[in-house]
Length: 104
Image (cartoon, rainbow, N blue to C red; front, top):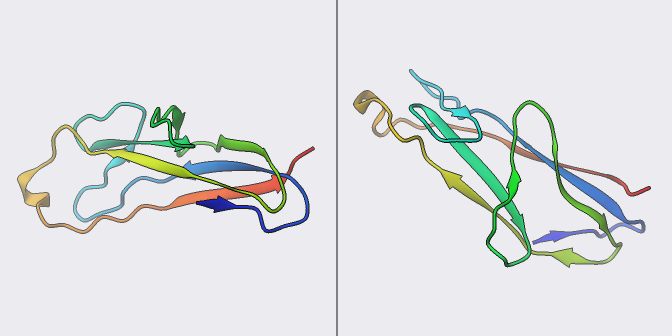
C-alpha cells in the first residue's frame, strides 16, 4: 500500500538498480536474459504490470495521489533466463526507490 499522509496531492516515481552480487551482478533491463532481470510495477489490482522499473531514469508510478488517500501497488520480478551455476546460493541486493513530489 502506498499512502499520502501529507496535505497536498503528490506524483510518485519509481526507479530500480542492478542486483549487485559477487562474482556477477544481474543487470536490470526490459527483457530478462543471461544475468539480466526485469522489474515491473502495477497500481491497483489489475495485475497488468505495465510500469517498467528502470535504472537509468525514474518512471511514473502514479500522479495526483490525493492527500489522505492510499492505493494498492505491487511489483513483478522476472529472474534471468540463465545464470552460472557458481552463483547458486549467492546473495544479491538491489534497491527500488520511490520519489514523491508535489503535484502541479
